[in-house]
Each structure stands twice: as structure tokens, then as C-alpha cells.
Image 1 (tube, rainbow, N blue to C red):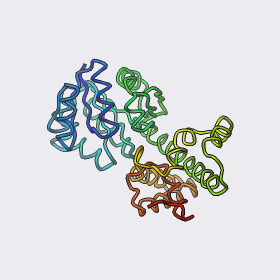
Image 2 (image 1 turned 45 degrees about the vertical axis):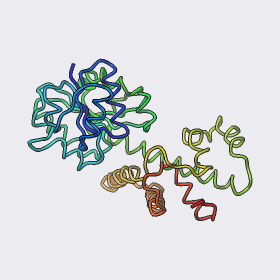
Image 3 (image 1 turned 135 degrees about the horizontal axis):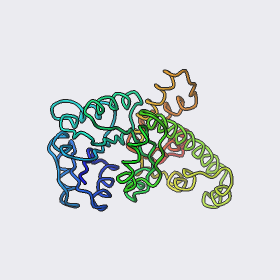
Image 4 (image 1 turned 30 degrees about the vertical axis):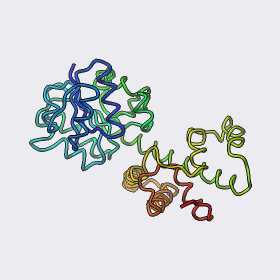
Length: 294
């Protein structure tokens, strides 16, 4: 069975590898061709020079790029994947993008006699490397069932949320929860530093109770040590929060704390932290308190 993977970033590169190792005939495409060449040299498979060439004759076409504009650039036009999409093919967009775009793409793929799923992922680079990501999916049940054979290669948890666009809406909630959790951990650790608590003993004491969270257990030590050159970048979190805030405004939902955290991440960017992990909200607090090591 033939698969295409478009977008070989920190997430897409290992996701495509999992497909190849599972025995699928994988063709990859990346805007920077050298990255696709590197992938092929490491894992065999094939590469296309355009999204259309890569998608030709494929049963499944996966996309994992940056934002709405990036997604449209690989879907449309003479070189876009829709130009060569095989009737009956399933297109799965793993990009975190807008729900409106998902609905647009669902219609565009249907017109080519294919089926579409919006399936943004969570779990970060480590989840992608280890094949244990979570994906929140929008689309039809029949298409979701058909796609299990590829999704299970790199996503441990796969949940169909509803019709097209529902996966993106769920991912917005996911990012809101992450940002708010990070700020809570950052403020707690910030106080712990000021009052002289041992961070390791503190986390041992509180993580097993209701204060426990993935962010606390997995990020407290690097936050305490002011190490942020890893993980999901602030630039991408701001992009995701921007999508969520725009959707909230459109729907009449109030997200006051999330809007404030988006501003805080803007301050982290101003500190030079555009590519830092999202846990770098603590760096902002350390700087305000004079504890930041430049």
C-alpha cells in the first residue's frame, strides 16, 4: 500500500519513518528538498519533487506543515497534491490549523473523489520519535476506520471528535490547557525558588496529588535550571493560541487568561526565546525577579 508524507519537520520526519518501518511504500516531499533526500538516504523509500508528484497513486496522503497558508500551498495549484490525488485516496492533515480550513479541504478532497481527515497531533517531538502521539480527528467514521492502519503507526491515542474541523477544535482546547498548565507550574516553581524549597523534593511531594501534571513532572527540572533549548517552540505555540483566540472571538467565547498568556509568550519571544520550549514562561518570571541568567 502506498503512502505519501508531505512535510518533514521535527514531527513529520519520524512519523514518516514509522510508516516505512511498518511496511508501507512511502514517498516523501519537503519544501527543502535536501531534507527529503536525507530521509530517503536513511530510510529508503522515494521522494517527489512536488506535492502532486509525491501524492500520485498513493492510497494515503499525510500532511504535516506549518500553518494554514503552508497547507494551502501543498494542496492547490498544478503542483499541489489535489492535482494528482487518486480517487478513493484518504488525505490526513496533521497540521495544527484552523477549523475553517479543515472544512474547506474536506470539500476540496471530496470533489476529487477522495476522503479527508483533519488530525492534528499532540505529544511533541518525543512523542513523534517514539510513535506514541495523540491525534484528535475530524471526519467521517468510515474514513477514520480506514485510516487506522496508518494512524496506529505513530499515534497511540486516536479519537474521532466529530465531522471535519472537529479535530482542529479539539487541538485548540489542547493548546489552551497546555499553556495554562505551564503558567501554573512556572508560578509555583518561581515561588519555590524565592522561598528556598528543593525542587526535586517539592515535585516528589506534590506530583502524586491533585497538583500533579505532565508539565510539572517532565519540565520542572529544566525550568528550574533555565534550560529551554528543546521541545515545542514558542513561535508555534503563539501560532496555535492565535488560532484558538480567533475561533473564540468568532464563537463569542471568553478566553481572558489564554489571551494574557499569549502576551506573556510574546515577551518570551522578545527575550530571544522564539525557539525555546513552551515551558519558558518561567524565564519571563525569572527575568522580572532578577533571577534570569542571560
